[in-house]
Structure formats: C-alpha cells, structure tokens
Length: 287
Image (cartoon, rainbow, N blue to C red):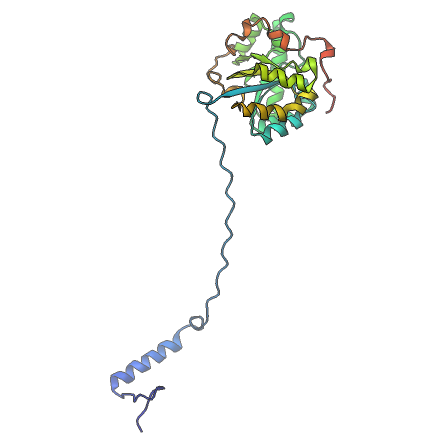
C-alpha cells in the first residue's frame, strides 16, 4: 500500500525525501519545550517622573524687576512670608540680625534653601555711626559667622542698621569684602502697621529696579503680602533678589547700592527710629 500524508496525497519514498523527513523530526524533538509554548509577556515599565526643570534666571536688563527686602529678621512671621513667596515664585532679600538668627535658625535656613538672598544687618541693631569701629566689626563678624554656621552660606551684603553709615562702616565692609545695600523706596510698615497703608506705600514707591524696604516682624506686612505680590505682578514686575538687579552682581567691596541711595536725605524716614517701641518683638518672641 502506498503511504499517504494527512491530506491523502501519496508520499514519495525517495531516499532524499526520507532523509529530509528524518532530519526535521530529529530537529523538532531536540528543540526546547519553550519553543512550543506562548512566551509570557513582560510587564510594561511605568514611566518615571522627570524632575521639574529649573526656572531660568530672570534677566532684569530685559524685563521689569523689583526687589523686596526685609530687615531685622528672621521675624516671627517669616515662615508665613516664605510660604507666600514660594507660592508666587518670588524671590526676596533678607537682611538678618544675628540675635534673631540665633532665636529662629530654621527660618534662616529655609531662606537660603529656597533661594533668597541673605544680607548682614548686624547682631543687635546698634547705630553704627555712634559706636566704635571695633564694635561695628564685632557686630558684623559675629552675625557673618553665625549665619554661615546655621545656613551653610554666609551673607553676601551688608545693610547697616537704620541705613546709617560712615567711613568706619565702609572700612569694615572693605575688610569683609562685602558691598553695602540700602534702598530707594520704603513701606513704612513699622510705623503704620496697617495693611492698606503698607500696600499703598509700596505701590507708590514701586519702580523698575527699585529696592523696597520692609520688615518681616510686622504682621500686617506678612498678611498683605499675597495681595501686594499679585498687584506688582499685574503691573508687570518680576520679584527678584537684589543680586538679580542690573549692576548688583559686579559690586565691589564697600560699594553702595542702589546708586545715590547714600545721599538720599529721606532714606532714614523709611526705617525705624531706634526707639524700642518701634520694634514688635524681642529675640525670643515667637521662637
């Protein structure tokens, strides 16, 4: 009888056909079992979250900028102020007193961590024009060392208490290789302690590349800040640290910024007079 395949077609029994068939059978038998079974699909890897791109530095030569600066801190409301600045992606400059850095180290550390500028505002806020050169040096150096120890970063500028300075202040600033930063617009927050008055005063004094004096120990300043920041942004301002303003990065030791601020006779009226009643806290309040 003639052999047939499964379809009924007669099979040829030539030697070549028989050798080929035998070879195929051996090959199939020698293949691993996995070749006959369906391969288990591998799970699709989940996409990994990419870190948010860093914000590009603001070029104040091309856009409208303003610098809000806060003296005498870290004040007891500084954490709330930092929350607002973070929410609005705004940067500021904090001129710190050593006594308050010692009382509230966490606030000072957060200022540095969140990318704000840090300046030296003395240790205990004396009038530098009424004390010795050695006292000025001690006040500034003590604060410089303490801020570096607490935050990992030393202050990069000096703002003398009340904005008052003389040749002795310039001498110490030159020794420490730090420029002096004053201001050209105020808020008078320490005097009015009124939200509307602070808001109106800042908007009145706002100008391109302006440096505004404020205080983070004034509760009304911190409370009105969301409204104020929104208003400044609506007017086209980018809120930046002083170091981002034109010319600020190239300041030499003991140089005074903004230009002409030292000759401004109205400058001292923006700052507390030195009467203890002007200040809302002691070094341990709220710590």
